[in-house]
Image 1 (cartoon, rainbow, N blue to C red):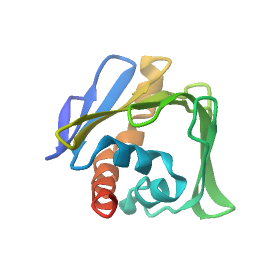
Image 2 (image 1 turned 135 degrees about the horizontal axis):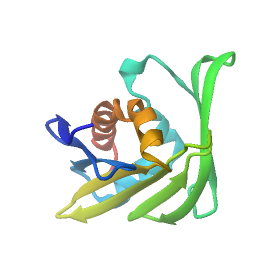
Image 3 (image 1 turned 90 degrees about the vertical axis):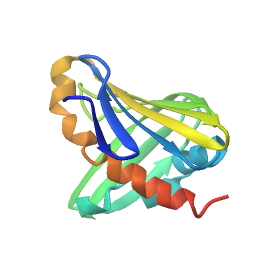
Image 4 (image 1 turned 45 degrees about the horizontal axis):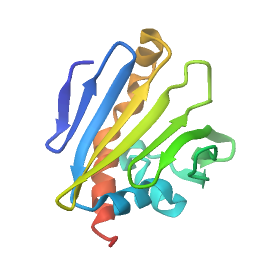
Length: 159
């Protein structure tokens, strides 16, 4: 993967052989952006890229250090898949770190929120156990620009 802006306001950057990061600045304070990442009802509104055609069938989030999450996607119960893990570090309005425990090559995901002048710069990174694991999971970030655009639209409705 080459560093590239995937659309005007979102960029995806390969940080190292095992880490990739997506960044975007949102026109909202950090507490509101954090709320959209940490409240299941809000998260469910923006996380799945609409172009994917899948639905978020279930969204369970206990966003605190030591809490867990489980996201289930799919058209129905027979054709669904789940992502799950544990929040290992949560500092409200500053950062969230969680594991992805679906397989041995699961990434550690980190999102940081840095507010300046009422806008929040978000960095979402995934660190894999190996270069091969990162390359095998590149498709997971293909929808990042669409996800972040959907988050941007949701943030306009929150205050």
